[in-house]
Length: 384
Image (cartoon, rainbow, N blue to C red; front, side, top):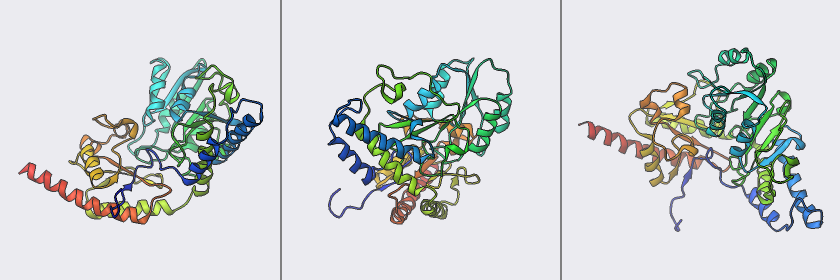
C-alpha cells in the first residue's frame, strides 16, 4: 500500500482470519527448533514439546483432554476422516453442512447417506432427525450437524441435537470450525463423538486443523496411513510450526470467546446497512447467530458483481462461502432454507474478527452507500 493510501477493510474472517501476532511469533520460534517430533534426541524432544504444548491449548479451547486431539492438515481432512470411517452403517448430515462433510457422506452411496432438512430459519428440523434415528439400522449410525454456519452465522441447537442422538445410540459429529473462539464450547458437557476444528478461522496459520474425540468418537482407522504419528491416527511428520501457531491462536481465541465487542460491531454494521438500504434482508436475524457474522440479501443486485465493486473500493467481503467461490449459482445453504432466487443470488456475507475495529465498520458503511447508490442507479437506467 502506498503512503497515504486509505487502508483496506477486511470483512472476510469466516473465509480466513489474518494471522495473529502471537501465532506468528510461535511459528517463528518453532521454525528455529530443528528436529522431528518422532526423534528421541534433544532436538526431537524439543519439537515434541512444542507439539504437545499446542495440543493442550487446542484442547482447552473446546474443553477437551489433550489426548483426544488429533492434528490434521485442516478441517477438510478432519471432516473426511470422520465421515469415511468404515464403522458407519449409515450417515445423516444436515442440508447446510460444509461441502467437506456433504461430499464424503455422498460418496458412501445412496443406501448409506441421508440428508436432513433444515427449517426456513436455517436450523435443523429436529423432528426429521428423530424420525431418521427411529428407523431400524443394523450397525452404527453417525449424525453430522455443524455448530454454526459459515455463510449465515446461524447457530444450531447442538445441545438438543446431542441429547437426541445419544438417546438413540448414535454418534454425533460437530463441525465447529466457525463456532470455535466465537462461542463458549465445552465438549465435556455434551455427548459429542467428534468435533472438528480449523486453525486459520481463529487467527492461526492455514493448513492445520484437528479432530477432537469425545464419547463414542474413537477413530478406528486413519485416512492417511504410512506412519505412527498422532497415536497412529494420522500418518506424516507433524507440521510443527503450523501446530505451534494453531496452539497460540487457540489460546487467544479462548480468551475472547463470549466477548460482546464483535456483536456490537456487527449490530452497528447491520443498522447502517438498513439505514442506507431499507429493503436489505438480514438472513437468520430471528434466530441465534454468530456474533461476528452478517449475511445480507438485496433483491435485484447480483452478489458476484457486488463483491467486485466492493473489492475495487477497498473492502473484502464474500458471496457465500469462500470454498465455493468461482461457482456461479445458488448457495446450497440458502437453497436449503428456501430463500427465493432473487434474494439468494444477491446474498453477501460480512464477517468480523480479532482485529476488526469501529473504524472498519464506519469506513465500510461509507463505501456501502456509494456502491449501492451506483448499483441502484445502474438498475434504474437498465430498466428505463
